[in-house]
Image (cartoon, rainbow, N blue to C red; front, side):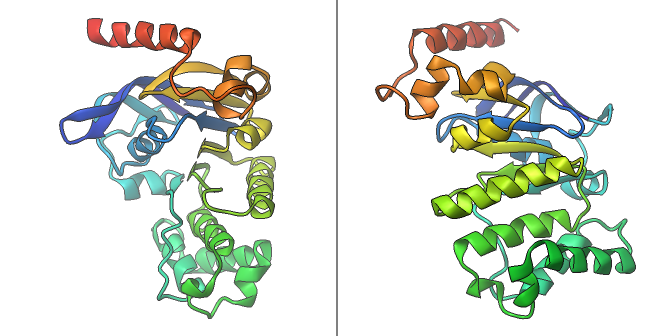
Length: 261
């Protein structure tokens, strides 16, 4: 469904992500894990069109999309729920949801109304408070609204950036249960998360990002049991502030490939 081929992207004159290769299949949850500043959010922005690609290709359903505007990608079924919720606090919950539906102009008013009713059933607290300002919601409820707004656009691939950020452990569990439920309904998800343990627990596959380079990939189960991943991202064993020998070797090799290309 989604394929990145040697994608390099960044801000200003500096590259943040270097020649990333990544795939997401239909109905898969693929996790992107790494430390803060590793380039996870930057990569998702490049996929959704919020950030330009300096080199490489992004394919969706076999067609190159790296030059398409974000709205055109939404219309193809690729929807981004960015970090930080970014709901419109002064608008009602219902108005926020309508904005999500309007992002995909291919949805008619009747279909958008049907999806709004569906979101109010799927997220009862949003349905019960649909006429209240979104700013009245708690952090966890605002995250649910952000996800529901994304779902209003009828995505086939959902990009989720740090959906558990700043939430209580109970709400984090609820968010991850929701994400797993979306996969059960056939949706593909690319999930960027610092909460590596729960991300890997629900992911079919995962990629590890270090200093803008993908240095490791594998099944969620395999990476969850990987000793180095456990030490660096799961809080198992001693804290590690710098890349260990294995990761340093992989990172050096990847950077060498980039410099030679």
